[in-house]
Length: 278
Image (cartoon, rainbow, N blue to C red; front, side, top):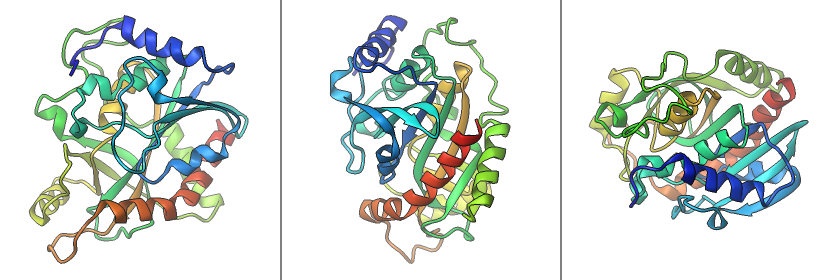
């Protein structure tokens, strides 16, 4: 496992993408478990297998297709990452976030990250959507950060500010798109844990006590790298299962995927609405 990557390797990944598309995307989208159908809406699409890109982290998880779709969506040139890799699969944090570095080098300025997340807030139900207004980065607090190691100042500063990780203007656009489409969009704080085991009821009660509304195993590292590079970020969580604060239910990945398929149409509606307003 390679822990640290250099700009040369990021450039090799970006160049491999350039060589397989005639388009120059400015918006990147990362799709979470069961949410890959958004890629089907892309027009004039060039499809790039992730396996054809040097250093790209392979995803081994069901519900992550492992390809890029580059094309047009609501008048914007987009690059859709259909399937992501996770730290728990055995990749280093820098490899997990290599796609974000490649997007940066391709000229992408705006990143939309989506995920399937478990409810912590008891008011959330499977099939709901949550606008991520902030996150809790427990993994980085413990030293597991994609920014660990030598800092490349051509990407960003040694100590990037994260006080506005999620762009307020993009959040406002998402709320407006949801209101106009009559789609309920909660707002809340996302927390990332290492996984791959789902949380115990005690875990969830603790996370609720410290202010989290939804929990997952992705997204935060990608957002950290995006903000390090100056990209604007919009985050959306699809709520895949209810809050299991008392241990009365069992959570499965099949449940997460099924919820993702139900959530996808609402997610597509909001993302399209945001892109129209950019």
